[in-house]
Length: 276
Ligand SMILES: [Cu+2]
Image (cartoon, rainbow, N blue to C red; front, side):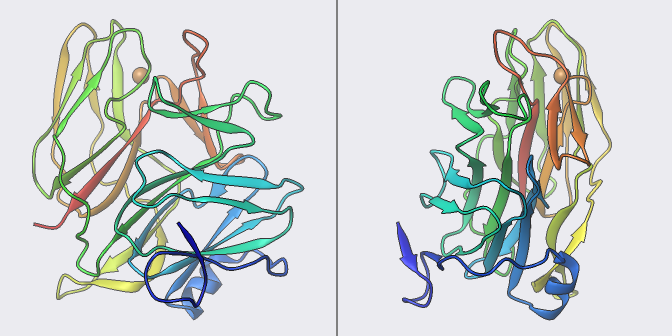
């Protein structure tokens, strides 16, 4: 459900097209506590991972010659389906907590079989998918409901299932590798926008760009290899398998290192950690 910005609090609000604004994320973050910026560079979004507090806005600018059709994956707390014209900036408010996987429908689709985003074969930058991940919590870092803390790598699919889980800080997360290949679980190196945790455990409303190398990688042997991961740092943790995917800092997105069964799999996943 979309509403014009300024019409009531809460809900996902959408402002019309504004003039193109030069991308300068850090300056904007410093000067505007309740707003952060994402820039689309033609292949991917920078930053591609954000953690917002409910009610905060984010602007999305297409700094390329591309129009964007931004859609949310099926289990987003609220449906998003908005266009961003080439060179234009759009403002989104997030009124409901939860995890939003948002992708450019023109180049990328959400595949319901593998339950993750996949680049369209017709896209100019195939096999790079254009997507971003936004976690929305209350000011204490809470909101999303916890899920099962087991992640499986099915046989012959380069995926982590489920793609996203929600756990409490310090809870053990179990990875089970039913594939024949060895896989690795490694924190993503891409920049993230995260609120700072204050001394009183509340979150700052301003966002800071950081790379959160929040855990040591774990290796999962093929044919049933297991690994346990615990993460103490609340927030959004994006991880990937460096054997089968690589983050490209030029493209602002991940590239698959192996295609299988017609899918250019980006072997990644998301762990939301709630404060204890
Ligand atoms: Cu892998």
